[in-house]
Length: 219
Length: 192
Image (tube, helix red, strand yellow):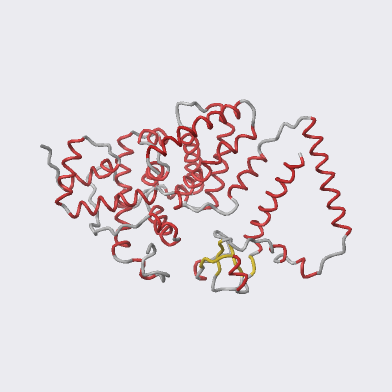
């Protein structure tokens, strides 16, 4: 879909969404699920990316949706409803992580320092993975494993920006950090992920896996 | 004219992808990238992964997630039913109660039909399921009985059943009850 088409869809969707928000705020509780349904998948993926566990992610997603319902009167139209909702999910997931796993807060060793120059470790020519490859579970698994190995502060920024498609400003607001920090962490997160994935992609990592067509999961 | 080296390109690659840089820096980077294979490899790989992670197909939502979400919401939102609502609900209860009474008056089905697996006969043949090298059960993704070292692989429920597999009571039981729940909800909506 072209960007223009996407923007029109969003613009068209927003008025219906605002109408639903108003109706729920005025007491039509049964309209709430219709309001959140388009985002329930995103709420789950945000929670999953932070918690890395399907059961916890689902529970947190439910808690976040319930919290959104309880606090809908506080929602102000100056921010996007989806951003507000995802922000609640992220906060819930972070609280859950702090409660359940206080020991896994630190980012992986050498990337702990946010300052200083980052040098990509792997310069291998990346063999492009087409989007259709995501249909294959081993490709999804590889991407999710790489994401899960990032430290929390990089993963959170990456999840909000590149998976939830929030703007730099929205990510900064959601996480309570500066826009400059968002950009720095995003750069690190993206380059770290590339470092993790490039050797697998470039060195025919998938050849260990028997595929129906050829030796590449996306062929 | 602005000139950038490899290190400067790496520091700006993310902003370059997001178009968050000054046009003069972008031009300098374009010039550098035309001549530098290493930086081009880093840029293309990074851009590709941004595209891949941005695709919503990356995350599998667990089976029954939407239904459980609706159920949780419904449980936390007591409906404010008026007189007519109660009247319809009572009428629906009478209809369902009558149906149960009729059902109970029938002779018991054969004993074998009472097994948990027999209750799962309604699993759609096209449903994507997982089978393993261990045992003859098929599961849905995320079932706690599935283990990675059992070599799990995907097929359809129809194909699995044809090969003699039977549905896992735990995961597919939940799936079938989810379907049943949706059906009964639809029935109530029609009657109300």
